[in-house]
Image 1 (spheres, rainbow, N blue to C red):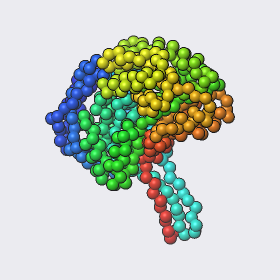
Image 2 (cartoon, one colour):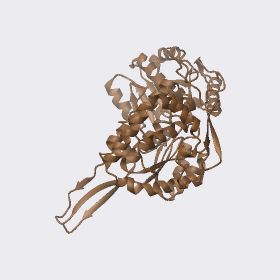
Image 3 (spheres, one colour):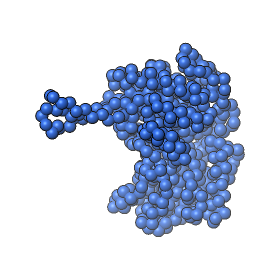
Image 4 (cartoon, rainbow, N blue to C red):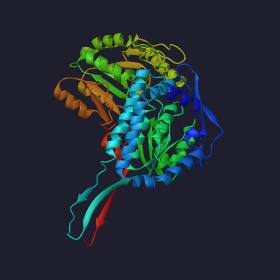
Length: 485
């Protein structure tokens, strides 16, 4: 994998970061990126600061007008070339992703495909930004609405899906004529760097797509939020950080898109296909070692099928293989860091101390790995039932009636994703409409698609990503009234 080796070997060179010949002050400070599975050093990167961020914002601001003025077909063609380069280098990008994040190579490859799909989707949507005409109340005027890019966009992406989150934010922004300053997570900056390098190869002009590499996001985030040239912030991460960014943007009434935390309920009714529900629960809970914002955090099972479901789930989870993401047959990789391991361990210990039954797993395997775990007899007093675990732990909670489980499922500040399994059509409609979540998986454990709007209700976020609605979040609406006609 020559591309992979060359990228990691030379990633610290200023020229490869686009800094040579630009006004960016190049920092002498550095930070390290390590493999979470082995701890091996992958790269030493320039640790950029507020000064570099200000320079990147200035570059984006200078480039934005000309980029917005380009014909939509030109922007579309450039995004298409970026997509094609992503596909051509899919194996290299997947290897980089697995090296820095740890997820199994097959999952990493799937994520890169998903990222490329977002770029392809918005390459097509670039040509579909439509306005409207409004019937005027008098014959001497014309009324219409046009849509224009919001301007410079500051984007902050997380470590758990470091390729797809970059594409899901940046592709729609570039498609409609915005310029971008991207700050990827410090744990997983290499795949973002690779995507940025491929975007430059695709022909994006100087200043249109800017990358900030930094070990500490607080100061970078404050600058993106406070700098008046940045007209919008798009962030994926915790609800706690989302609140901070929203406050920092409030003085300027700056537009924000926030995709925040979740505590997804997964509900299995008596009339469910149990085998399908078990398969769906494994997809929704254990993908990416449970480190997803849409992960099934609370598994509610109706009394009539509780024991059957719990036994089958424990049996199938026991078959999952834990190990390094590059090893063949591995289905569960490492957790991202020690804080993540300790949180999972704390949740499991709290549950068992309060009376939960351990059906499988429950142990830390090493410094980086935790066994896929299933707990039954879980109740609302336990941390696993009220906090987002963000790890490979499936807590099963028994319920009696549809009304009761809906109340329990909605009893949270979060409202990102929910899942349920049932076959009776009347029940399906009632539950789907009653659950207070932005996305509902009905008889499926996976629902993310570039064609569908991704986002939550309540404190799980603001706005939508993906679909045509994702492009709308980067546009401003302008009303034109023309008189004397």
